[in-house]
Image (tube, rainbow, N blue to C red; front, side, top):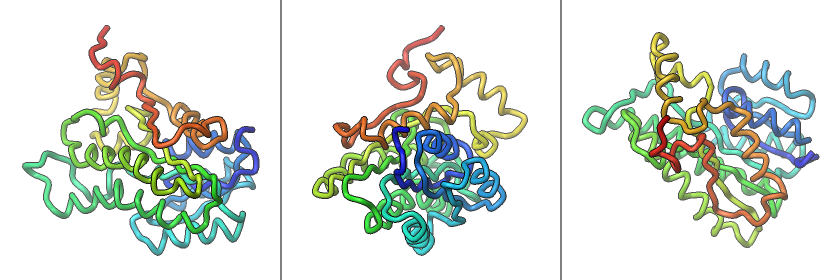
Length: 256
């Protein structure tokens, strides 16, 4: 029960990695809110989490929605101890591709979801947070390596990784720690957005060949790392990154 009675907000907490984080938080005794846009998955996810969690429908790219998220959580549970800025990924309506092909519309959609939303999640949370709290940003190992058609996404995540350091300096006076967890390939519905349905299994097999751990990550792998950074066990960890990618970046030369 490392997070017993801690109040948490997890954006994108209704599915995939976000729900994996929320589930680990629930196991560790936290309470709070999961945030997402799809009411059906919000309802099913919060039902699994139990009475200590509420679901809030919101678009994290809209500042008025973010303001409402933190105000509503505060009114229900009191001051917030933990914020997990997890929402991100493939933006609805945005094409993936190279710098040769991707224009302003796709740029704005991708950056609004993966960069702007993270900044303003933190910005809007701070008036409702306890001093001494923890903010965990979700980056990606794509912020460290070049991946085909993902230069925009990788650039956004590289900025998020840098923000863990900058935000930590900004918030030293309030003793709010900011750290980042960067997943690698993880078993979530996002594969269906980045990859055509008939190619998913082949892509997963190809990915596993480049993961020293020999498997694709699971949402609970990410959740356990986030629990550590959200808990008092990591009180001396500030402005840092945990790569949860099965060794894909740091052991890149590895091959069977």
